[in-house]
Image 1 (tube, rainbow, N blue to C red):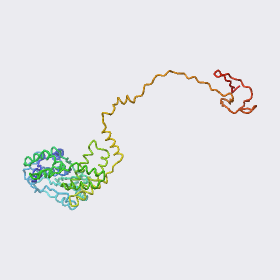
Image 2 (image 1 turned 30 degrees about the vertical axis):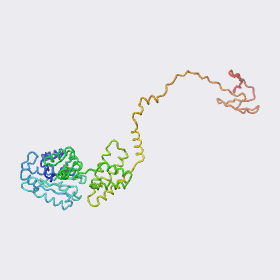
Image 3 (image 1 turned 90 degrees about the horizontal axis):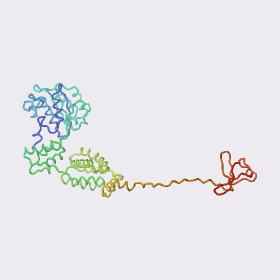
Image 4 (image 1 turned 135 degrees about the vertical axis):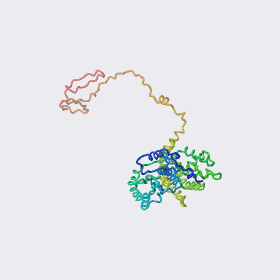
Length: 437
């Protein structure tokens, strides 16, 4: 059962979850002069080509109601049957050379009498080579009369900036989880497919929000083929084992876990995608350590590019194993951070009831009050000189000479053997010789 084709929207109001892009498209159709180049940017299966087909049908509809195509006139019916002469759909992955662009230019020169516009829908235009894009640029700068280009891409950055600057960009967002689940439940009810709400959410998660792939999965569900068979989920314990093996660089554990997942019918690309999603989910948790965040960023730099390049051939399992080994090498444990995390964990495990309050801490470490002390006057005691020392001076400087000169000598201009006046000390009744007359 080909549900994506059967339930493909043919009107603007039937497009699911892309209200902004739809409103831009409807407003552009009412403008005069008409924009000649549109660029649809979004993930695979988000509705880019579907909206481009509705716009192309609306441009040439002979019985258009506002901006909605009638889907009943000859032009609309011809396009719905894929045999419209003025509307061409080109796969950019096949038209990668300059010669292919020349064929596109020749198609632009052909017009039909019953169509108002010549419309070219170029899907996956980012896969065109740089020379082909440069040749296409000249066509976009000076387009033929009544020619409209609708470019669809999943990788906007691979297009030339000059092409993007000349186009009106319509960005397609990932459709909300609840909206897609309700859409799947509605289709399952009409098609009499057994589906529960939990299974609808599981289909959404497995297909990463792509409506086309969700419908393809839903069309495969039957009494014998369940959603669990079509959308297997890797247990978180397996993913945790891989992360622990990265930290310990346990290559044997990595190989054993990979073999178990392969035995459970998981594809290598699915294993890497699940590991990337789980690692990102762990990084967003509040209790995740800084050491894990730093190393998770390193292994994601290895896993994400490798997941996009990993195919499904015979060497996919070997390539997946080597990618996991490279991720283990990229993991660099930090001793300081690990010690800090261990101390933090130990502190968190303490009984919070035993921790003293701030009032108890203030009472415990508050300084003792100072007691008033009686004021005591310190009376200085005069300096007492030994009787046998002689004091001499010169100007305002005085010094003590413990070794007096011989009798009759002079010391600093003073005759030391002369009789000097005495001074009576009232404290100890000692007699001292004055240094100056």
